[in-house]
Image 1 (cartoon, one colour):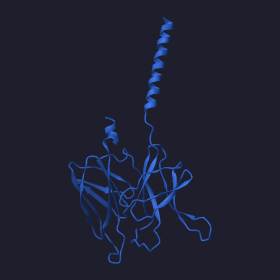
Image 2 (cartoon, one colour):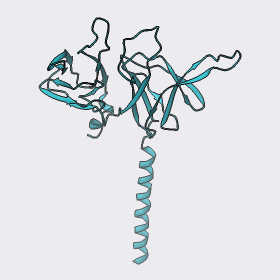
Image 3 (tube, helix red, strand yellow):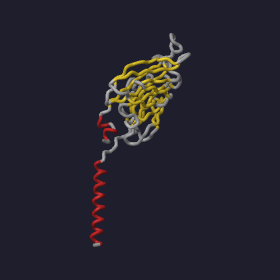
Image 4 (cartoon, one colour):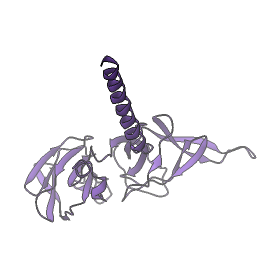
Length: 252
């Protein structure tokens, strides 16, 4: 009887091990870590190193760039190549900006570029303005479907009203606001002028079920006609999230 019992226990663990191995074999491998680029000011194409080769990246200003593979290190240096002043010499690598991204498999990072100092009026003949980077977790867990992610670069207090919800924004920190009920809403943005709060943006917004929305706010650069502008510039990025890729749906 003791021998049969031991055999039974051995068979149990063998079957358990087989199930575990089979489950491990069918578990999908997470995709490689990627990053996307977005900028609130015009930025020329740059390069970064991947696997010992230079890869050109296009920086989106009205939409996110395509996803790019993360190299083995979390610190990415973006640079440009300029001709060498010495004839026959290879181009010189000029650093532009660095960003620290996640390297774990499946990680999705958004690299947002913004000016190092107050935004100036764009002039194609002027030297490019120095830029900095800030990274945001762009995974579906960090920014779920039917959520608005609002980000302010403004040096002034900013409040946003989405439907009946009003949120005071903290500069350089994302705020998540759930979609209100219905298929559309209004987005109103207010900031402080010389004396009091005033609304500077009011725009309707469609709300599709399988989407998420990012809103980026920044100060309008001064101009000759308006040296101290009160208004804000707003960029909206809408992403469609297929239901099969939404973690909340996948867990059902």
